[in-house]
Length: 346
Ligand SMILES: [Zn+2]
Image (tube, rainbow, N blue to C red):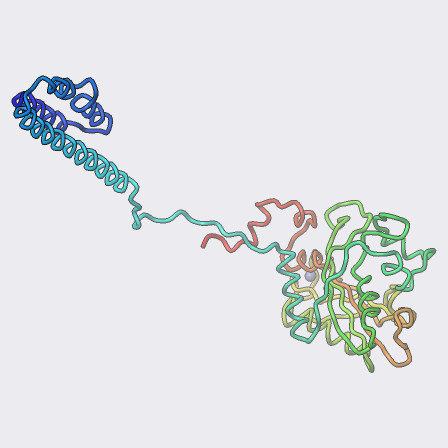
């Protein structure tokens, strides 16, 4: 019997040594130590032995079981280690490979222009305020000297949500809100950038949704020359330091006097081109001195306070600055268009 155990041990060790995966190790385990193994049947036959023999054979069987078990464990461990090493080797990252070029997006051109304008006015001490895109007829029109029957409303027809609420047709509604909120009636200056809406048919230069920046300064001893100086700075910042501006008399119900402002053509040096339509001047915004009725409506005494206001179309400035001929390009998110403003690959 001792010899039989010895034989099992040698066979088992030889077979375990040949194992190359976990399945083979498990098979060897049941073959040599399992219930139906030769080892088990030998053990079952031990009952017929004498006590003397039992001791001797028992010691041998223990030794064989231990040796086979240890060989199985150690083989299993080496198979697992090898698999792990192989995996690590396969997954190794080659740090010397060139990386994939990562494409970084950029700010939308309207955002770039808006931020540039904001920076300029913040540097002059203006606050930047935000206002609701849905506002009342009162704030959008009536307080701005545009009563319900006023014909100038036609040009600013917007989308009404109820009889009294509408998508704001201009950021000028923020003039009213700012003046009303300024309960202490102290001088202030602010700009308000934001989206505005009008019932326009969309074409190359019109959109039912666009964006404006409203400017408003209210205080004592504010004059037209303050407005002109401010807008001159604006024109030079946005279109180049050699730009000049000119005021043309115009009409807005909420300013008196009112002006359209032109900037000298940055494209042709005022010789005349298709951007300035041969005139040497390009219209960029509307402005004026705050109408006494508007001041009065908002609780400011027009005898004591004056103010100026202006409204700039952000799209208009962006189109001029970047030579964009169709306003719809700003809203369609066409990658081929936006790519022109990209910082390219980093
Ligand atoms: Zn020109």
